[in-house]
View 1 (cartoon, protein in one colour):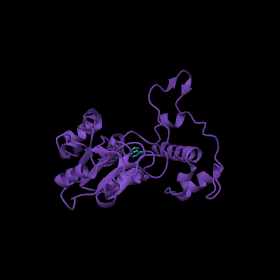
View 2 (tube, protein in one colour; view 1 turned 135 degrees about the horizontal axis):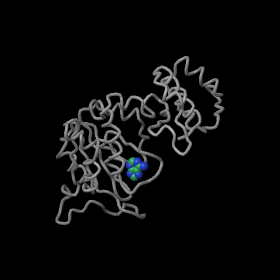
View 3 (cartoon, protein in one colour; view 1 turned 180 degrees about the vertical axis):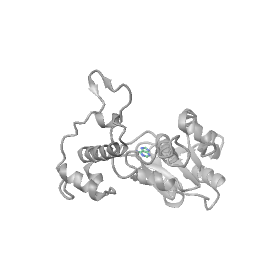
View 4 (cartoon, protein in one colour; view 1 turned 60 degrees about the horizontal axis):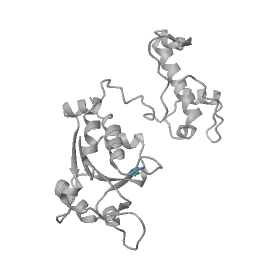
Length: 255
Ligand code: ADE
């Protein structure tokens, strides 16, 4: 999958993309990321990319010309792939989006700085607007990296374990079960016996129940959209859940 990122701070992407799993994905040609400096397409000697807003008020607004020029030079007109604007005004990014977007061969991401974008960029250039959460960052670069990371790990071969993304938190609409590793006893805190039993069916059942328990305690609203079996519903009812009114028990399992 190919990502094209448009940013005024292209240098911030290098270290994150050149580390660990994303670096391997790039080396193995599973993903490619081209970061384009919007300033390169700003006309004039000073390559101005922002100006004060018409109508007054604080802050600076990103000018349309450099952004249209950059996007059209790289993606053509009309653009060859979807172009997502990262903005706190966008719809909230979810694991489902990460899975759906991972099916695209190419995706472009537009990162803002300053107070915002000239509205004509929203109206006539981007195909979607995404936010990574209800808070405001100083720019869209971190959100773009969040999307690249979350999308890439859904591509076949990117995670070492082929099922790696399958039982992630949120993948099936639930939070993931607790994990333990060696030692089995640490400061008198024991790993649950079932995980040492070698009984794969019991382990799977325990994990499923813990996943349901944790989701009920921390994010009960997710249960309304999750894929739940008859056995899951039985477990949840035993934990005090009803589809409309949720009575969550304390989430006092060890982290
Ligand atoms: N730019 C600034 N804040 C943002 C957010 N929360 N999500 C996406 N882009 C942003």
